[in-house]
Image (cartoon, rainbow, N blue to C red; front, side, top):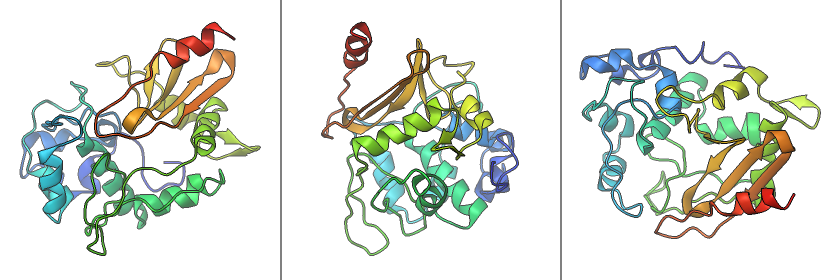
Length: 250
């Protein structure tokens, strides 16, 4: 939106992904970009157990992830029900690719990681050009070899993203992301007060929660950014006791 690649969050998903023009599912016509970025697309999802997700594996093997997802049953009217799922992250990556002519990693590298001096290995990229990180799975990438897909950001680089949001999109004196977008990202959903646009929201804080217990937490009133880099394991882990422990002692 800041760069003019998309008009806004109310733009139809089908403007970028014609597979969602309504010819397969009537509810597809109602899908807006906002639904993809807030995990409220309504597309059926079964996450499996401990990051073993047969649906995701089938999607990766299909050779065309967007086409695969567009054939999945719409369980809810878009915008009505929050459900955390990989489908929406995959579609967000596909939209970035269609809108900008770059895959999601290249876009992020140019407009976010570069300005923040963040060092990152290249994200997993499927043969059909979808670029993102898939927790706990090694899929075959563009070269046909299995690739490690977990984020390799340092804890300091993770904290930079938190600092960027704490400062309303400013970093090192430069406006990297618009203040308007930051506000949208941390505004709670009508159907889930604990989630915004890819950001979790809590009492007095907001943050990222990633695979294996990775965390970036922003506490605006106390001018704090807290980041934790945890060892990723096949089973999910949470360290929800750390932030209260920290705040009690400040």
